[in-house]
Image 1: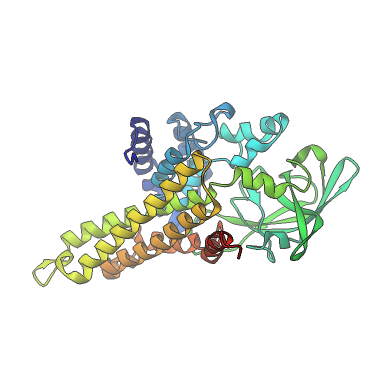
Image 2 (image 1 turned 30 degrees about the vertical axis):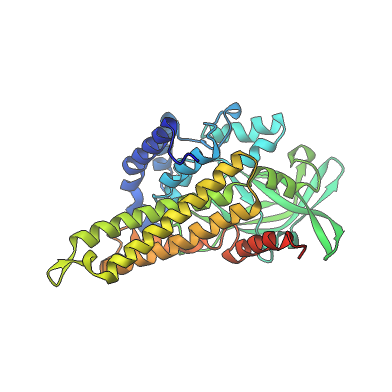
Length: 387
């Protein structure tokens, strides 16, 4: 089994790391303290990211992206993940892969401008009453001739305020299942400015300052049938086909943040002296470092193995769930211990540790809570025994 990186992968890591340190780190403090991204700055960094070949790196080459294989993409995401989330996500955007599932006309209208940095997309699934149970969504779409009429509310929709359009998942019918009637879901493109479609400010978030969420409201919002993404009632199928690796993306960014926090903890442990010696010589600190390093290594191996299996068409839902679960819970532990090692200074915003600690909390919730990941894993294990 080959664990080493190829020359191309090493170049991707080095290029991305250099870009993050040079172009993103200098702006972190301003974004963290203001909670806002200046769009002139976004455009400036965006242009540099495009020039460096780092923009839309997740999109296949045939659609204008960098076409990275999954492992290379995760290594790239790991480096980006070390920076403030709003900066790296907005300025070095990775359009949703689900845009590739559209028709030629839809890809020309929606995907191509996102790859070129001319537009942003947002994905709208979650509702006030439907988070993990997406089939419980109440937002609906009904067909009216050659149009669809959308009604309902979505919330926690990331960066919808700057998005030019939303990819919205709506209930379009029901079906009988062994567990009762369940919603059938379809996906639609909805352009900003469409009558009946309103974007409202979302909630103030302890994590990812500058990376906003919004509330989307649909009131008899009429859109043409050509804005249906995929087939009617096949929204989940489209999502499963094209959004499968998003949990690995979360895992990879967790790896990056943990690595940054850990590096600070190790350096501080070697430099900070108490009672006449570096604090790293005390078992209370040295054992923390050993545990942090071990957890980080385990999480990295799980994320990269799942990425390799994904490219080999061998990855299961359990592989993805294990990687996301391990990486997100590892980050919480590493961030907390790094602050503990730094003492009071760890909580001051002179260092990125308090930001990493705050940001770590959301990773165990979005893209499937830790509880949902454990459910997926245990279900996979029990199915082999017919349970």
